Length: 120
Image 1: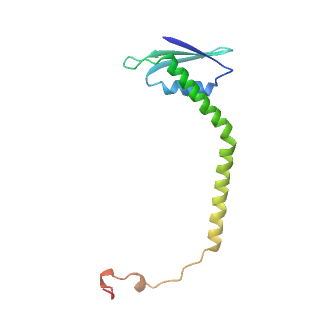
Image 2: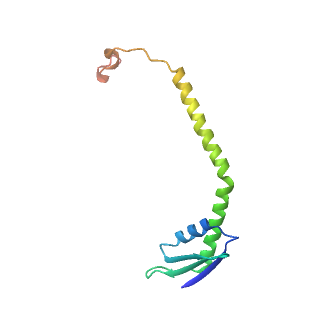
């Protein structure tokens, strides 16, 4: 069983859990922590391919970047979503206020047989 350790000041718990989840189909993953480090123990499943330490480290880096981008763009995404939702609500309101009720049509005008058209 391999053991890898990551410094808590460099990596988030979220990144660790996401990285571990990405390898859960190939290995049994045991997570632990103390005051300064996260510990990851990898045990290859019977039919699984062995995961190298470098693969897991790269996945940790990838998940850390994703989490950082998520945190940095969270406010703008919330703002865009709120703006889109409020704009669509205003637009619907205006459409309902400006809508015109169509004139009533008789059934004879609407229900015509297409094959009995006088233009054919």
